[in-house]
Length: 594
Image 1 (cartoon, one colour):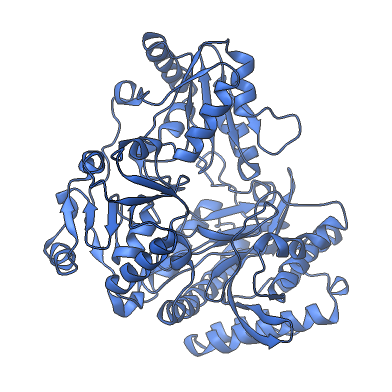
Image 2: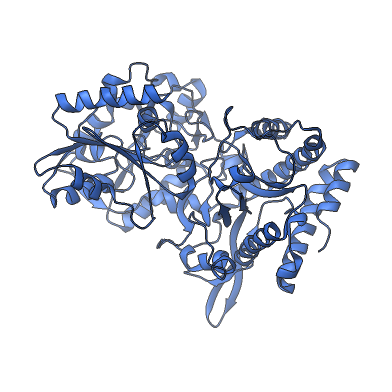
């Protein structure tokens, strides 16, 4: 593989030389600014060999460097070894920014090339302005992979399907009306939707174009009188065509979106979300149209789940909890026999979830890391790294499922054999952070970054930390990661609102030893009013016990013990009716009071 990467970099540099491009930037995104992307757009992975979901590579005539975040530091070190690509660790002191790297490796008047179809307007403008200040040019139409990637997959052509109102809880017509109201409030009368999950939510459609994410590759233009979906005809069947026609949604080819934008009626006032619309499509909009910069209204509308969606989440959590009970019973029986590996864990989780009603697939690839592998935040076992689960240690399992009525995402860290006092201590202080956030009550208008400290305080008290976010939004039978809300150290102006489903997942990672993460999904709900206004709290949705064997009970306060005991009681009460006698006994043991 190393030789392939070196050869691919050489081919890229030949194209750069021919087109007088001195450096190029290759991101992880697709033409829709997606986090998880179809194979067609995995250019960064193809050119570098690094397959983490986040990362950007810069290639010059004689150097290359890849930037990624803390989730992937250890993985990237392994996958980049021998390729000549330097790893640059984001948010670590001393790590140069991409612009600093380019400025130190290029000279005045040089040109940096990017593929403008896979860079958001915001990102492209930021890069351009920073390069200009260093007297370096930016070329937006650099498309080398059309030439050098000979066996590149075509864009996916899977057929879409209708996500009916009885599951979504709201018709497309109702959503269209609410979107137009939001647009009108900022002086706009139209928007081009590019984010695949926003299109899926708005049109009440789903697809299978992206692994684990039930979305379809398309665009959609929305105005008061005109609604268009840009999608290849191969992706449509009789039912979907009838549904789109009944909802007055015109159908145009996927690759005609740029021509459509060039010929837009000048009366259109188009909302531009610069973080989601590619710089290529932004530049394609008729110059006579008015552009209004803002945030896509779909993001916030989609994040606040309706009654039917919440019911679906609750149903999915029960099904997922039942599947996990069956899985962990199997796991405990098989580990002493020496039969369990990290890769087998992923396979068996799918098997047990497949037995559940309305199961569609995984919501992301399972992360199963034993001992030192658990310290690699987004570790995925390979045939070379695949560990057998044996002896003493910690097993971190982060997994999730897509059910037709809801999406799940859960992490449990399990003690294998005996746990040392050090392991129990770390296990418990991470759990304290999880419980603290789960118990939070906060006034209306509170942001996630204002609550983030609750999940970290016990760690910070010991000069420990984790570098990933504490919480991300969850889609309803959509992307397992969605915005606009988050809970993390970084400032995010979006406030937490009733109906939002967010993860609660503090962690701790000790390199070459173990990783610990405790994750549930939480729903923001009303908690009443006082003279000081409205207050909210979290309702925990996920239903599966934490491993009592890992807990140092002396480190928990009375309030924390009460929360854990009450949570475990709820888990038992919700799951037991769906279990047989053996399974009920197992769950009763795992949810006993501490």
